[in-house]
Image 1 (spheres, protein in one colour):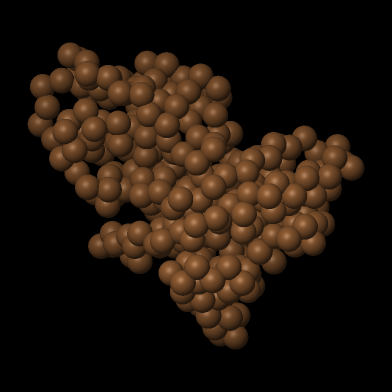
Image 2 (cartoon, helix red, strand yellow):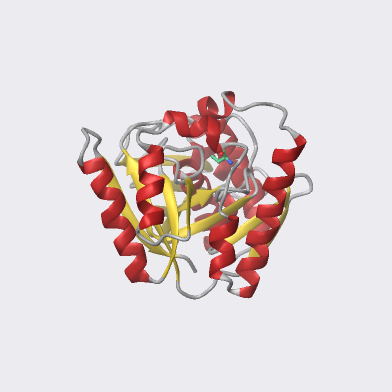
Amino acid sequence: NEIKIFSPATVANVACGFDVLGFCLDSVGDHMVIRKVEKKGIHISHIEGFDLPYETELNVAGVSALAMYNTLDLDFGFEIEIYKKIKPGSGIGSSAASAVGSVFGMNELLGRPFNKTQLTAFAIQGEALASKCEHADNLAPALFGGFTLVKSISPLKILDLPSPDGLYATIIHPQIEIKTSESRAILPTEVPLNKAIEQWANLGSLVHALHTNDFELIGDALNDVIIEPYRSQLIPEFKLVKEAALQAGALGVGISGSGPSIFSLSQGLDTANTVKEAIASVYKNTEIVFEIHVSKIN
Ligand code: HSE
């Protein structure tokens, strides 16, 4: 009647795949407890870690849970406890982890009536509360694991991509908050054709590289010529962090989701740890408080 779950952090966009590509981190995430209760409806009974609303309709986990609950005719309800570890506004899918966690847990307790794509569709409604728009590039990898590509939102189609063995992410998170809605508002609504060509060539190459375990091509393709020029201005020392990571052997570097976290990908744990030291030393020379994680992608 009760399930404890780990709901992982995720990196959306992955440089060239704005709003469609994402991957899952195995070392950072929230914990949640989902429980069947007699009282009908969805009730948030406990929140730890960050100050988030208890009202179901105002809570991301509550909204996605309700979206699922309302499609069913149940004579019982669910209670949700949230142990939030992922800081909201950090760029590693904090709202997505909440949105996914509740529906995943409920689905397990109900004997899995829904598949992962259907769960993502419910979670989109929770995510939309936080980001003010519907996108699934953090939700899909949190549910499917590894890399995913959201082919379309309507109808929702998610491609479960392979992750080459030995691919690691290093994520640095300067402790400032950037709201997704705000970092979307600064983006242009039109892009020049030459930039679009470069970006989709990179995205296609990256997907090919994941299928062929081509680490060199992963590095070559991890380039964002459309979004990064705008958003990088919101991130302290972005250029220095990027240079340090590449010098330390990272395959490529980019903004994680809507920032301010910065991700880099490396081949092998040793390189990922060297990158960790290198980028940490950039922020150690400043006043910026930060967290840093290394995670295998699988
Ligand atoms: N694709 C989204 C963005 C992810 O970059 O705005 C953040 O939720």
